[in-house]
Image 1 (spheres, each protein chain N blue to C red):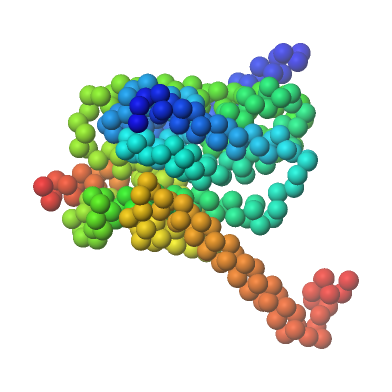
Image 2: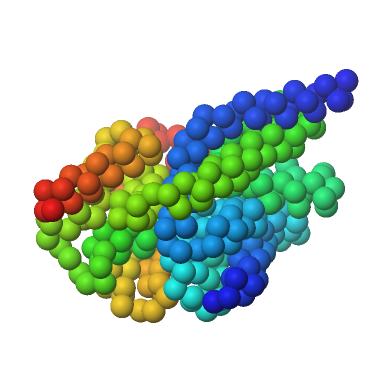
Length: 256
Length: 108
């Protein structure tokens, strides 16, 4: 019975991940092509897929590794680019609590942007969570397998494609495709625009250190704009109440 | 960089990534993430992605290039508009690459 539930959950995770796998496949191919065109040895390129297993960090690391940037720069850059995983870790933590240490480690290794999305939705559907870590495993493993295979194929193909196709720009294009639709609020737009401007202005810094300067600027601007919006809406509510004056009865909160 | 140093560096990158993913799963219930940190983390993706996107668009060859003959600028703008209207990553990538090749072909 329990076995059957485990299997059900696992395959439900695999199925939920399938549409995402289809979207990630070309990205994996392109990573392989870009890494080999930049001159990384095939096994080194592929080891980033199995050891780091984080697409955006791997893409950023390619030019840095190729130009022989100091290890510390690569580690710091990885830290900044993958900082968002803290959010996923925090969101799934309550559900992972009853699991053993081994399970936690395995599921954390598989915790990519793409595995997080269906898994958190699945945990929040209101049904019992007893075997849902098998769903997480199914989603995570199918993405993992897809990434290992697609980057390997890309590395193999990269050796045969001409170098001047501009394929290195697909990283920027992919990020545009991911981030633009999420810029629906003013603070996020502010973070995006200010970080972009600072990154361009500080491009002269060595080893893409402009990435860090720009990221912190963007985060600060985003926080600031959010705080301003918060104050403005708070002030707006207050003004609204004053204007309502004697007719306070219209506002439920004030009658109480 | 020798391959073995590269591999060690990659191992350290993997360790950092794994630590970020595992950290709060392990610390659940023992620590509370400050609200400010949680809010700040929400701005990491737009800030980091912008810091990757714009230099690639505007400084393709080591100098600032704002002309229409810069294929990366034209491609990036095409992609931004495509992403805004379609909200589709693959379509955005295809439109961007076609725009890039078009400018390269025109400028020749």
